[in-house]
Length: 122
Image (cartoon, rainbow, N blue to C red; front, side):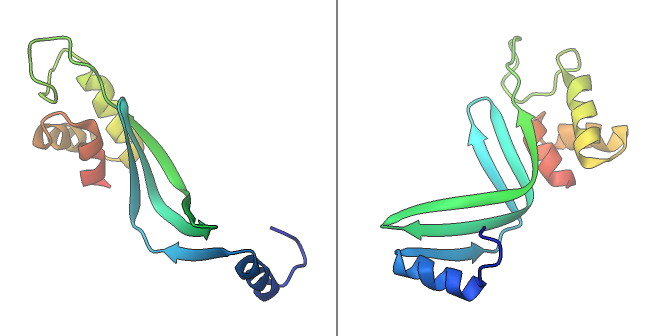
């Protein structure tokens, strides 16, 4: 943050200003959005309390899983061979580094839920 500043002095200054930090051990952070999820693997999570307000600082390996809209009469999440399945399989293979058959099986097990399939394989 400030080069050449002793970390202990920095902590003391932050404490005087009413800022407290706490490292939170986490395996994965998932941010759920309307159109998909942001998945952060191997995260470094820092909880910062500053003047009564709590903030989180998160860094790590970020990937994004976008939910697709169903255009057929099938319920959301049902695997549809004609509708984006190949793209989903390619996405899983790219994100996880698995074989095509493993990606297909993961999608079938999760009823076409791309995010859950990625999480199960990682």
